[in-house]
Image (tube, rainbow, N blue to C red; front, side, top):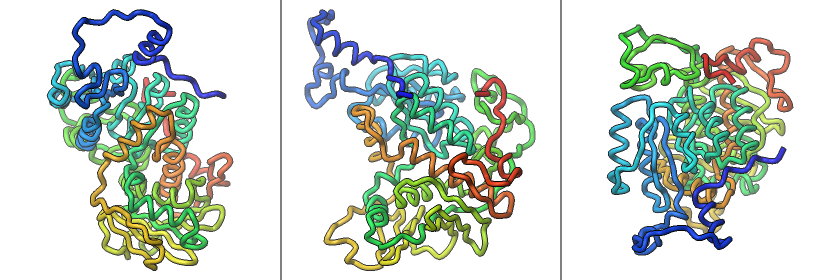
Length: 428
């Protein structure tokens, strides 16, 4: 099936009209910003973006988008009235207008045909379903992680992005940091010899079912919309702590509390890049002595490891081959088994884990229709590995994944954990 084309945007209409000689009425005095003078980006080259679920992480992402001169942020959607007002004020102050519109229901934002792309930074209970709705509405998508809640949803998400021709970028921003990219390049290109092991830091290897905190009085939905906050997740009574910070809430399908998906999806994503973004591992064993070992079809091992890391900052990864190894972390530094692996190159050290480069990669691909670093297929394979590992942890025994069907072989209990029911009215 050919990917569906996006509906023509306002800019496409203007370009087409000019090319065909159709006159378009214009004011006599045209502002310099409209002409792209004084360093301004003309409207025809701007990417119009809307944001959905812009909390703590989302507001950071929003700042990265606003830094880009070719972005026009025009709409904010959130279930919290206070947040809607705060973010509208921030966006309007940046653009020097009062034009940013606010919404409580994301579907109203997606109905706007002048919006090219959306930033989705809701809780994980919404990521996949909202991204699929956005793709069907013809929007390109930057979505925070974890991007999906379970294996079945992961596959549906990947297929929807392909079918709709969507430019999708998962919020795995370390793919666009130079030292992580170089470490993965060493692994992919054979500079480490035959790859034997790739290591990811999960920051916790536990899995349990979702629960809830004690019931508290329900707020007015026009101010704080609890029902929309829950979305497709299983119903539970309102609790202010859950509403404020997502406490114990839907980090990975019916299984929560595991860093394997929440934090590990960053590190596993880098490990997947190191093995050329191949399909996920086949064999998964439960944790033993602070390690959870998974095995790819070619014998390479993916190891979730809690301890034993060189102190290089958060989100460390390590790649080992028959001829050498490399380890990197959020400090921006790498440690190599041999300085010869650098081959005279100087790799820029960027500490922390800024998303600005990742956002820029996404925006460039929106314009070129290229494939971003954290594209839907890459995100799918990393998330499949995390979900399968979480299931092995929860069951406390090994599981084996069939890469043709993405079902567990001869394992009814594991296969029941591949998906979960969505709450009405959010079923597929």
